[in-house]
Length: 229
Figure 1: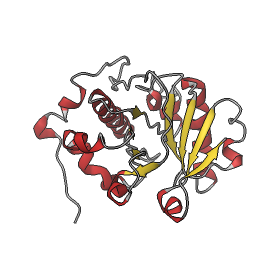
Figure 2: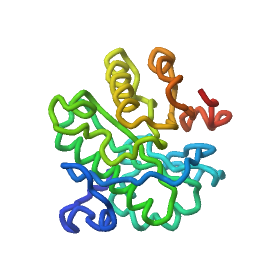
Figure 3: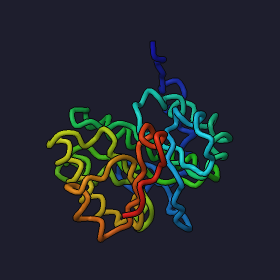
Figure 4: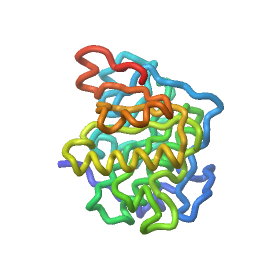
């Protein structure tokens, strides 16, 4: 049985945002723009980190949420360990299209709050950007594009395609959100965990630098990075 957690007793992990800036109406925490862009050699899922001998890697969260629940609820206890790696990608808390919008905003909050906390502890942090449908990447329902709040412009971001682009409907929303993200944030570098099919990415590779990384299983079979596009 998976462990159950409760935020209420400790004020929803308020210590995560004690040193954080808030510059949007939803008070999604800000991950600050780094002084320089660092491209990690590889991306390692949080739950697999102890199987990897590579310390020149960024810890990422492109896996089921329950596999990284411990760091969401007990973030501070992992800081010293995370300093052994070259970078940290903020958690990929799930945003499902059929998920209540208030919970999608909450998961976006924890993505940025944990990223900001880790950054404030001296670890190079790359914002993970996740969206669901047009409610998160346009202003059709909300006054701000919640999927992009708290992420610096003209910098480096990370996205995951693994498990997110199967079927025409998933591809449609992924591509629409990708288009909106590139227009809104104008990133200089986009890390991509998983496949980069031409029917989604071919129109965008001329506008920014994409760095593709194989998913964990494929990478274990031979080489992590697929190369620059």
